Image (cartoon, rainbow, N blue to C red; front, top):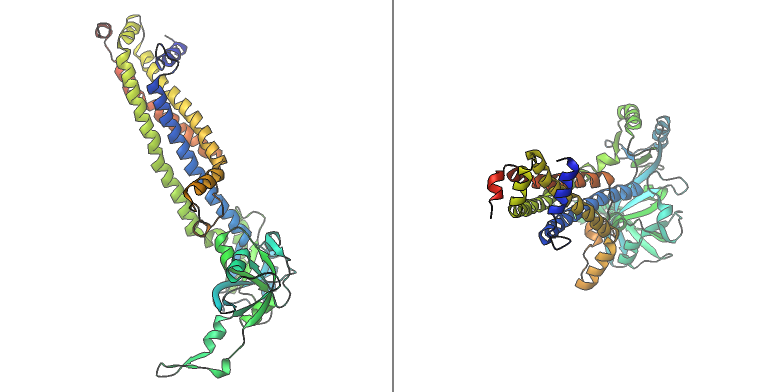
Length: 423
């Protein structure tokens, strides 16, 4: 028999005499569909989470940062920025420090970012994130997030107070006996700022903690030299391929006592955890498809028993063992292809409608299934990667095909005389 005949018989054996589709075949196909769909959904969500995190990260931070750990601040940021330009990069002076925000009797620890309002910020696309008010950071003005505005009941035009931890620490002195006392010479008044705008990047951890003020206000608040910065935010053309620029920058700045950290280095642990989780979930969930392959094995063993006399007849008519082997391997292949095809469609459909499904489940259960305070993002991210789909499809079809190997081997080894006498 030729290969076409083997494929025809394989297809015929998947169907009973009176029905268009066998029940046990349907069960096997459904098992593959569910396994492939679950695998696609989980891997796509993990890929989407990683991609969305990187996107949000690059929206709210720079491609790389330059810091001076020895001094604690950079007193001449323009000199560093000039060096960056020689290495095909750009930079902007930034002040990053923790503060205590006061609204009435309410106090909250936050992070302040001081920027030059008339200078393009290399990594913080604040103008695109504005929701209310305007992008204005004159002296005495502040831009807060929608989350902070809700927490402190603030609106555009209202005022808020900020305390510097360094100034607070100076107000307390400890004597030789370890007793604390008020240092009256260091008593100060908190800085007052007017809310000029409200932003939202859609990145929960960033929006919850970050405030923006004028760079000069930040220097004054934290008692830094005039025009100083605690960090330089840098940007290159391609943040995913910037090794050449970073090497050149490090060669020029490290000797001057500066440290250069890329966005990947600053988030290395978290990005590594995401990659490990994706690989581990792929490894674990592939067992669902493996279980479906065992179901195919059981199905084909039943088919071999049912078709014993027909197999004996085929071998008596001259069919080779390889042809009999091919018939049952093709059955596993057909089930794998069908299940993988519909499983891929089902999985992609779930990904496409994922947020609608979450909304329906949220309405049914009356619970928040994807709280942004834990998962950073306000919606469930997902990215359908064609490479992942191809790998899943190949593995699924291969496992299903191999699932037919044992019954195929058993069928090929049948003695035609015994098979024809089978009752």
